[in-house]
Length: 193
Ligand code: GLN
Image 1 (cartoon, rainbow, N blue to C red):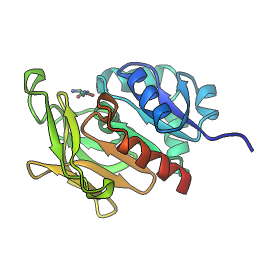
Image 2 (image 1 turned 90 degrees about the horizontal axis):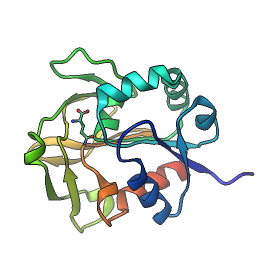
Image 3 (image 1 turned 60 degrees about the vertical axis):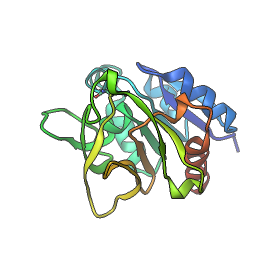
C-alpha cells in the first residue's frame, strides 16, 4: 500500500505555508494543479486566497467536477478562509458559484477589511484547552449551518470553524501560525476516513 498523500490546491493563495505546516504535522504533500494530481491524493486542502478567482480557475483547469466527486465520495477536504467559501453551499448576498460541499452559508469579508485583520485567541474545545492563535484576514463568517454541520469554534457569536463529516472549514489561517493543531486534526480525519 502506498503512503497516503495530502493535496494542497496550488492554483492561487498561500499554498507554501500549508505545505510546510502539513509536513511539520507529519504528512506527505502533493501540490494539486491538474485532475491527474488530484488522483494521487487522499485528502485535499484549499488555502486562503481570492474565492472568485479560484472558482474560475478550478473550472478552467478541469478540477471542479473531479473535486466534487471525490469529496462526495468521502475524501477529506479542508478549506481555509477562501477555501471554505469555495466549499460552502452559498454566499450571503452574492451570486457566487461554489462547490456546495458543506451545508453552510458564508458571508465574505464579514470581519472587516484588510486593516481589520487580526490574531485572536480562539477557544476550540476539539483541540484541547489552550486557545488557538487564529489569524483572520478579510475573513468570512458562517451565517447559517445546516443540521448535519457541527460548529467547532465561534468568534463574536459567528461560526468560524465547522465540520460536516469529511469536510472541514475554517475562517482563519492555521497555516500562518506555528501552531499545527488544526493540521494535526485534519490528518486525524484522514486517518479515520
Ligand atoms: N476575502 C477573500 C475572499 O472572499 C478570502 C480571504 C482569505 O482567504 N484570506 O475570497
